[in-house]
Amino acid sequence: MSEAASAQVATRATVGDSEFDRDTAVAFREPGVYDVDLSAGWTIINAVNGGYLLAVLGRALADALPHPDPFTISAHYLTASRPGPGVVRTETVRTGRTLSTGQASLLQYDEEGREVERIRVLASYGDLDTLPDDVRTAARPPALPPVEQCFGPEDGPTPVDGSSAITERLMLKLDPSTLGWALGQPSGKGEMRAWFGLADGRDADPFSLLLAVDALPPTAFELGLTGWVPTVELTAHVRSRPAPGPLRVSITTRNLAGGFLEEDAEVWDSADRLVAQSRQLARVRLP
Image (cartoon, rainbow, N blue to C red):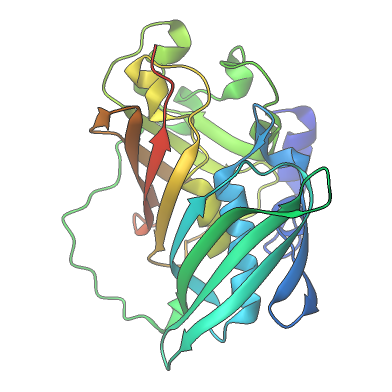
């Protein structure tokens, strides 16, 4: 972690007053329309991170719908987003007592000033604080070494060419057993596990969980593949409001076929609760 990031952690940013909150903010223009400014701080290989984009649209829908928290949100990534201005257009599909459903599109502008749709999402929102606390699950938290025995981007060379600005905004410590790709010895298992947080110490909330499910290096690296792995579709489920403290993220791929793979993610909080899950379909460049 950089000296600047360490200094920020000492003061600990809070939910609602952090770089993540500022960079995912949406400005109300008129009913159903929000102006956004996508920050270059959340890019990797010059592409805006898909989880960050999901959080931006998630914030717009939270404002447009009568319920505050994303329960499930499915996104189709249509064209590559770039840092700079854009507009989010939302539509309320249905509202009920416990759930409301809406859709949203992020649009930017081409060289001729025409709108180009980047992402389209459909989401259902509710209130996480009203959910019962009964848990019946066979899921178990991932077994990770202590944070100090894991490794972050600052511990080695950048694995890919291009911008890695997003790594400066994350506290990301990878399980050494999923780091074979960084040593030129990928395991072939298609697994990635890490401790996760924001570098300024801001605790997690439902919107940063949307970032967490798409913030680790691609499992394709451990399958022996390199380069950009663009997301085609991503569905995230937020199951609970996370407890303060670092998160643990586990991502697995079981099947790569025809140049596409799935990534199944689980996010666990400091209270050993499964707070978010996701599945995404991504495209890979085969040798």
